[in-house]
Length: 361
Image: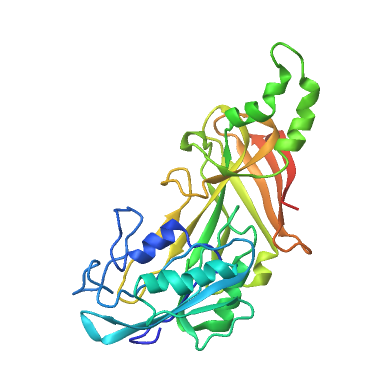
């Protein structure tokens, strides 16, 4: 990273509240968040840093409907009050995707905050944007259902390969996707089991239709209770943002094994992800965003992939098999999740699960 100067790209998707908090750490969080661990450099305070010029990393709402660089915001000079010889220069890209939000950002938000002489906005698609220089930092909230759905990560890879300076930093810096067998009794009864009896009438012929309608695709924004997790989570995909390529995303597969921890019925797999933010020069330690059921809830919540029927399991049973996430060759924002598992009790196979989940085609 260039000494005394930093240039950054923000965007390609909407900045999350957590990322905004993480970036505000440099200026002072508005409220305590245990997930924020970055510390100010020696001799500075969070409240004072950037206070002279008002400069810093900003976050703006934007569209999730395309790889658009909604605005490229350039903070030309921002002097640290405790280090007069050191200045920061930012190049950011909050991705609005529409002209009016970009113009609102450019002509009002920046002016209203007295930053017109510090920030300039470039409205362009990431893949065709022409920036005046390489950047030292890229910040983008590209994560979606099952971490990679919509593949906004591809725009970040393009930005990295096109504009990131040597030794530059990408935020998030890495990510991990987790799967685990779960209990989801209430969800199953609500969508499928209820049809076995409706006010005393036998409606069981509807069950197969309900399975096809409600269980054939992943359920996103699912609020998974930690008590419904029936085994230790397994990592099915890990990504390092400084090295990942588009080809790495085409066909992801992992062999995973779960040992059941309770006697119960399992109804499918729960999934979530974590993303890590590497430390910056002068800010040791970094921080992590966890979207799992044991962490403070985020707007992603968790995802649920349900079996057609519950499976009865006992403590010590082993669920072993493959998870595959395969990108659609034509509709490039879509993917298909495939499960192929065997349930064993000792050396005896007592069940099998094989199912495909289009997301969404």
